[in-house]
Image (tube, rainbow, N blue to C red):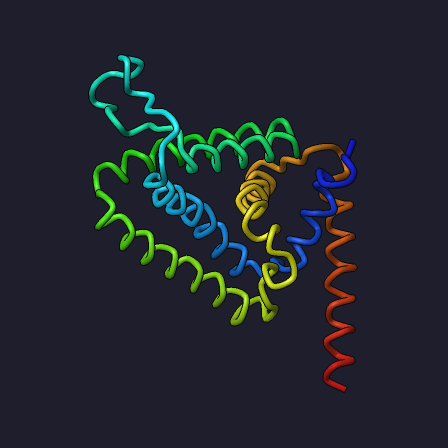
Length: 202
């Protein structure tokens, strides 16, 4: 059964789906959304640390200074908990991916060092964001969701991309009737948007 309010997954996913109905645009987002999250964590590694998990022998020497509690770990934790609150099964997988991204980004950051890491992050972010804007402009022919809902774009997009993949490959749905209900909402959203667009033209 669906949740209401902030954790109304059906409502949020329908909003997202209305902006991502073109197959090519969906594929572009599938490829680029999680790398944006990963490279953001890479840069966040260089924020002030609260605690180094490698000190006092908690972690073996190869991990020295790689895993530190800082704003990056807080970001990954918030995202993971938020996704888990949406849906326990898919949310658990999303939370695991957040953890993997944090660990992976931390090791890459240590390896690169700040002087090179920020350049890698900048290049990756530019490529990924440009790809997504092209996906919307060329294929979706609709402005990105971030122009209407910034939280949607930055907080929920990674989870929705994952949920879309699980749905496509395994037919997964958080609860029976989820996809049918979401599709109906998406169709309504797109219809209303096209009507508004047509009125502006005329």
